[in-house]
Image 1: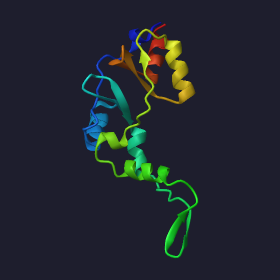
Image 2: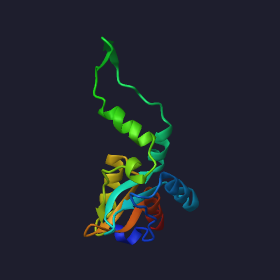
Image 3: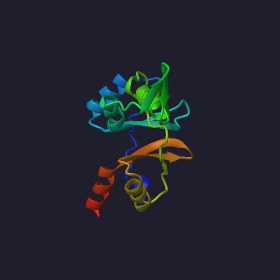
Image 4: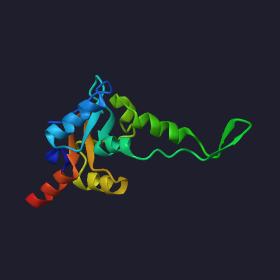
Length: 149
């Protein structure tokens, strides 16, 4: 069975300019756990999930440091700290979204997408046709397809 046979074609999306509050409202209103982020050409540039939103409430881990003569010397990279802080105070989707998104062409098989979901621990995958978003498949969609067989 092909992905295009089970995908949801009515995809709720946001843009990088939407606010985090917009996303929260959409997730609750439509009882979904994530939305693709698209650009003007309807190409997927990111994804925002409940996990990204919950991330805002986690404890901030400050890198280990010590002081010498009123200077701070960090014992580890501050890059992760900076990224975490930016995500925690995010107002726009562009600051909170996951930018590394796995997409699948609509001609792929259910086995292909199931394998990707399990190996990468992904709950939903945007489906594209020549790079343009045409649908989305969640784990529940796959289970429903198996139930119909």
